[in-house]
Image (cartoon, rainbow, N blue to C red):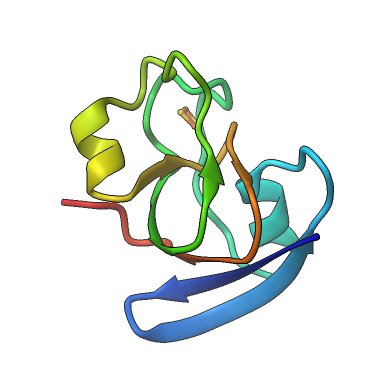
Amino acid sequence: MAIVRFFRGALLLGVAEAEEDQPLVEVAEKAGVEIPTNCTSGNCGTCLVRLKSGEIDYPDPLPPGLDKSLVEDGGVLSCCMQAAGVCDIDVIPPL
Ligand code: FES
């Protein structure tokens, strides 16, 4: 079971439980948090958020909208990635 907490900076926006294979953007919606999306397929980067703590299932290879340096900065494409356990997400993407 994965519990995801969504923040904007230090402000807690909402918490929701992720179902199996549920992308983070849908978990956010359940928590009452809106994350903008566009392509919903890992290409455009519109849905980029930042992992504060916890683990994400990163696909291998990474989708076109994400690269290694963004991942090192905590970058997560919320339209097509799932929480691997309890995690904290900042809706402000890495700069
Ligand atoms: S909405 Fe385009 S990468 Fe997620």
